[in-house]
Image (tube, rainbow, N blue to C red; front, side, top):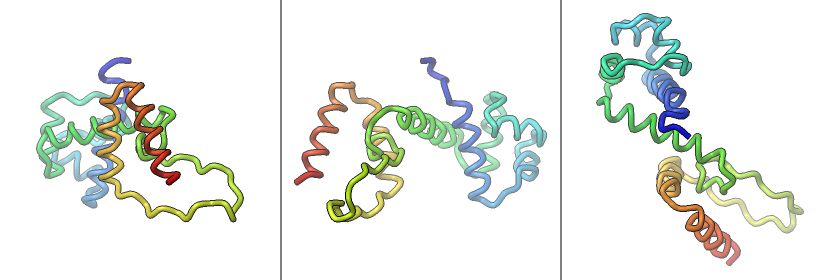
Length: 146
Protein backbone atom coordinates (compact mmCIF):
# COMPACT_ATOMS: atom_id res chain seq x y z
CA UNK A 1 0.00 0.00 0.00
CA UNK A 2 1.42 3.37 -0.96
CA UNK A 3 1.54 6.23 1.46
CA UNK A 4 -0.76 8.32 -0.71
CA UNK A 5 -3.35 5.58 -1.28
CA UNK A 6 -6.73 7.22 -0.89
CA UNK A 7 -5.21 10.49 0.32
CA UNK A 8 -6.27 12.67 -2.61
CA UNK A 9 -9.82 11.32 -2.47
CA UNK A 10 -9.87 12.10 1.25
CA UNK A 11 -8.37 15.54 0.66
CA UNK A 12 -10.99 16.36 -1.96
CA UNK A 13 -13.79 15.17 0.30
CA UNK A 14 -12.35 17.15 3.22
CA UNK A 15 -12.26 20.33 1.13
CA UNK A 16 -15.82 19.74 -0.05
CA UNK A 17 -17.09 19.11 3.49
CA UNK A 18 -15.30 22.20 4.85
CA UNK A 19 -16.68 24.28 2.00
CA UNK A 20 -20.26 23.12 2.45
CA UNK A 21 -20.04 23.45 6.25
CA UNK A 22 -19.10 27.08 5.73
CA UNK A 23 -21.93 27.55 3.21
CA UNK A 24 -19.53 28.45 0.41
CA UNK A 25 -20.37 27.56 -3.17
CA UNK A 26 -17.68 25.89 -5.25
CA UNK A 27 -17.40 28.91 -7.56
CA UNK A 28 -16.83 31.22 -4.61
CA UNK A 29 -14.12 29.00 -3.11
CA UNK A 30 -12.41 28.72 -6.48
CA UNK A 31 -12.42 32.49 -6.81
CA UNK A 32 -11.12 33.00 -3.25
CA UNK A 33 -8.30 30.51 -3.88
CA UNK A 34 -7.48 31.94 -7.30
CA UNK A 35 -8.13 28.71 -9.22
CA UNK A 36 -10.66 27.69 -11.82
CA UNK A 37 -14.00 26.13 -10.96
CA UNK A 38 -13.15 23.00 -12.99
CA UNK A 39 -9.80 22.58 -11.23
CA UNK A 40 -11.49 22.80 -7.82
CA UNK A 41 -14.14 20.31 -8.94
CA UNK A 42 -11.41 17.88 -10.04
CA UNK A 43 -9.61 18.30 -6.70
CA UNK A 44 -12.82 17.75 -4.72
CA UNK A 45 -13.55 14.62 -6.77
CA UNK A 46 -10.04 13.25 -6.17
CA UNK A 47 -9.19 13.45 -9.88
CA UNK A 48 -6.37 15.98 -9.57
CA UNK A 49 -3.59 16.46 -7.05
CA UNK A 50 -3.26 20.10 -6.05
CA UNK A 51 0.14 21.74 -5.83
CA UNK A 52 1.39 22.95 -2.46
CA UNK A 53 0.63 26.52 -3.59
CA UNK A 54 -2.99 25.59 -4.35
CA UNK A 55 -3.33 23.67 -1.07
CA UNK A 56 -2.17 26.73 0.82
CA UNK A 57 -4.61 28.96 -1.08
CA UNK A 58 -7.52 26.56 -0.49
CA UNK A 59 -6.76 26.23 3.22
CA UNK A 60 -6.55 30.00 3.58
CA UNK A 61 -9.81 30.46 1.66
CA UNK A 62 -11.46 27.99 4.04
CA UNK A 63 -10.09 29.78 7.10
CA UNK A 64 -7.71 26.94 7.93
CA UNK A 65 -3.99 26.54 8.23
CA UNK A 66 -2.52 24.23 5.62
CA UNK A 67 -1.46 21.69 8.25
CA UNK A 68 -5.03 21.59 9.60
CA UNK A 69 -6.40 20.82 6.15
CA UNK A 70 -3.79 18.11 5.55
CA UNK A 71 -4.27 16.58 9.01
CA UNK A 72 -8.02 16.46 8.51
CA UNK A 73 -7.53 14.75 5.14
CA UNK A 74 -5.09 12.24 6.66
CA UNK A 75 -7.56 11.44 9.43
CA UNK A 76 -10.34 10.96 6.87
CA UNK A 77 -8.04 8.72 4.78
CA UNK A 78 -7.13 6.65 7.82
CA UNK A 79 -10.79 6.27 8.78
CA UNK A 80 -11.61 5.20 5.23
CA UNK A 81 -8.80 2.63 5.21
CA UNK A 82 -9.57 1.28 8.66
CA UNK A 83 -13.28 1.08 7.84
CA UNK A 84 -12.43 -1.53 5.23
CA UNK A 85 -10.86 -3.74 7.89
CA UNK A 86 -12.96 -6.19 9.82
CA UNK A 87 -13.14 -4.51 13.22
CA UNK A 88 -16.10 -3.22 15.19
CA UNK A 89 -17.33 0.26 14.40
CA UNK A 90 -15.76 1.86 17.45
CA UNK A 91 -12.34 0.71 16.21
CA UNK A 92 -12.78 1.38 12.53
CA UNK A 93 -14.97 4.47 12.65
CA UNK A 94 -17.57 2.62 10.55
CA UNK A 95 -20.78 1.42 12.20
CA UNK A 96 -20.74 -2.32 12.78
CA UNK A 97 -23.56 -4.47 11.48
CA UNK A 98 -25.89 -5.47 14.24
CA UNK A 99 -26.08 -9.23 14.72
CA UNK A 100 -29.44 -10.86 14.12
CA UNK A 101 -30.91 -11.55 17.57
CA UNK A 102 -34.42 -11.97 18.85
CA UNK A 103 -35.89 -8.69 20.09
CA UNK A 104 -36.38 -10.12 23.57
CA UNK A 105 -32.68 -11.04 23.79
CA UNK A 106 -31.29 -7.79 22.39
CA UNK A 107 -29.37 -5.57 24.79
CA UNK A 108 -30.62 -2.04 25.19
CA UNK A 109 -29.21 0.29 22.58
CA UNK A 110 -26.10 2.13 23.67
CA UNK A 111 -26.11 5.88 23.28
CA UNK A 112 -24.49 6.98 20.03
CA UNK A 113 -20.79 7.70 20.24
CA UNK A 114 -19.60 11.21 19.59
CA UNK A 115 -17.69 11.55 16.35
CA UNK A 116 -14.54 12.82 18.05
CA UNK A 117 -14.39 9.69 20.25
CA UNK A 118 -14.70 7.40 17.24
CA UNK A 119 -12.08 9.42 15.37
CA UNK A 120 -9.67 9.23 18.30
CA UNK A 121 -10.21 5.48 18.74
CA UNK A 122 -9.67 4.89 15.01
CA UNK A 123 -6.50 7.01 15.10
CA UNK A 124 -5.15 5.09 18.06
CA UNK A 125 -6.15 1.72 16.62
CA UNK A 126 -4.32 2.27 13.34
CA UNK A 127 -1.01 2.37 15.24
CA UNK A 128 -1.65 -0.99 16.91
CA UNK A 129 -0.29 -4.26 15.64
CA UNK A 130 -2.75 -6.89 14.46
CA UNK A 131 -2.13 -8.87 17.66
CA UNK A 132 -2.77 -5.83 19.86
CA UNK A 133 -5.99 -5.05 17.98
CA UNK A 134 -7.21 -8.58 18.56
CA UNK A 135 -6.42 -8.30 22.27
CA UNK A 136 -8.24 -4.96 22.43
CA UNK A 137 -11.29 -6.36 20.61
CA UNK A 138 -11.38 -9.39 22.93
CA UNK A 139 -11.20 -7.11 25.97
CA UNK A 140 -13.97 -4.88 24.62
CA UNK A 141 -16.17 -7.91 24.01
CA UNK A 142 -15.61 -9.12 27.57
CA UNK A 143 -16.44 -5.66 28.93
CA UNK A 144 -19.57 -5.46 26.79
CA UNK A 145 -20.73 -8.87 27.99
CA UNK A 146 -20.38 -8.00 31.68
